[in-house]
Length: 357
Length: 255
Image 1 (tube, rainbow over the protein chains, first blue to last red):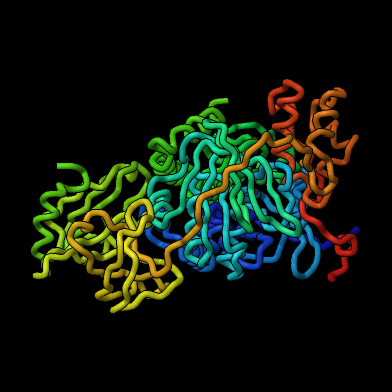
Image 2: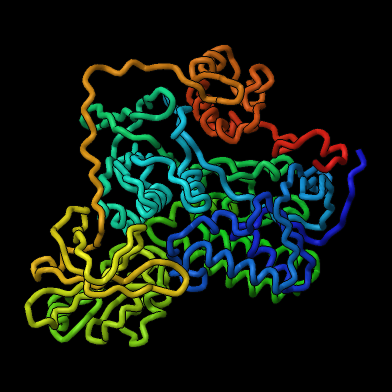
């Protein structure tokens, strides 16, 4: 097997908010950067987000997700970043080489440093009937509606009242589907109140303390059986689609393959590569950022991306120590702000437990 | 005065024309309303998680905050019309088109229709998408209740009660290699207590998805069944390729 080999300074895997921000930071300080992404469009999950984002103005708040993606891509291109789409990184060898399956064939890249910003994958729950057509992850439903213009169903039941479940419910309503309810196994809604208000004012009932027992149907989903955990009542929702928004886990197989130590943190979505405050993953020239380093949100991903880009640029000698320290301090402050409040504290504590371990 | 402005003051000021009402109650990281308000009526300040402080006395009813608020938590109230009704301006992003002259459903915070209102005008929120600011006339008693307008109201009905005990059925956990929950429990009872050991024996996680679907569920199942913490159960060893690839491509073909 004699595959073409190319050398580069920094390779960023994943062109989502974290990867693009990492690329911009490094490229602006003069590091040649290649970004590799398996999708046909850059932006990661941003390009299918049609809702306006929270966050501070710095993170594009008030803009819609795809607009934020367009801005980041433009910044990258201005900084001279080489963004390669349709390019899956299929291996990250312990010797430090990446294997890429790209439009021109399979080739190897030997970078001086790598930022792993591969995002997260959706969790799922299993119950009798969960493999019926019509049952899918909420992210898949979002792709159908917002990218392909197809409704997953006419009557949709949502499992999970976190932000993803609430946002996807709203987007299904926007696209013309009826949302027959949002069932949530825990006793409260974990998403932002503003997201909740938006679906409530469209008449979507919320069922906290309800667990899915089974799904029924012949050729596809026809009904979902749900148990009320408090009253013991069992009810049946007629629905032709069930979208599961039951959390995400970091997608960091490449880090694991490279030899990074994987640790478990419930608050951050499960197993993730250990890393420090500078987003170094414990091995020379390996950085992680964004949801791959613990599932949070897009603005945090952007800041972690910047952090990893700064660290990589410094260690490659393209950014002076003092300048890097100053820039990192600014990013740290913004990250601390984003992890404040009732929603951020648990994530902050989980991240700190990594840095201190 | 509350953070979101004194409602009596807002009510009074609305007699003279449109004034914003903020329904922002939760500390989340968000501040675009502060930036668009040219009058400085909305201040979030240094900490992006703080609630906005709103001074209705400074509001001129321009509606920019209504258009920018990602939570759709701001709207305008105008009570200046002589016939005593209330004129509301609300954000609208649904697929069904709304235009001036339409009769639309006015919905309260629970999505219950209060009744119909008449659309006075619509304005595009921005140049980039189809979202609208809809101005609608409603009876005065709804003035502080209406939270949304719709052309079509969902009729979804109530879920049906199911009688009788639900029998626990078996089902798949790993759909690529077809390993069921009961099989996974049997493996745990046989003494397998890590995912790596189980994979060698059962092929779980070796299918098309390479464990992306099932790994988290298997970790949970095994840590419960084998009384081990999750880091002890561990994750699958990751081997290349992490995405399906044709063997020919690895040999240099491009097709």
